[in-house]
Image (cartoon, rainbow, N blue to C red; front, side):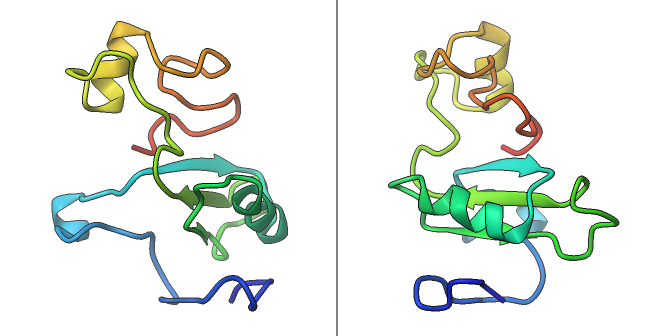
Length: 116
């Protein structure tokens, strides 16, 4: 359940957002992931990104430190300066991403590079 119910609406009780291909095809949509945030901090993270469309928060984690927060929206994962590098893995191998304040995967320090 979202904290700010005027702005956010729960669309499912379990799971991360997926594209039309669903979880079976591992059809992830543009996102970035962080761990160690409370739900309120996760929601604030989304609030602070102009292109954020929503978020998912892991309530079932053993602790806040282990809980994941996934932020969804256009370009929140960053973009690769080489358009032929169309996955995080390809972009990381090249090591050139559009935002120089983040690591080669296009994620800020503390974010999970495995979140595509």
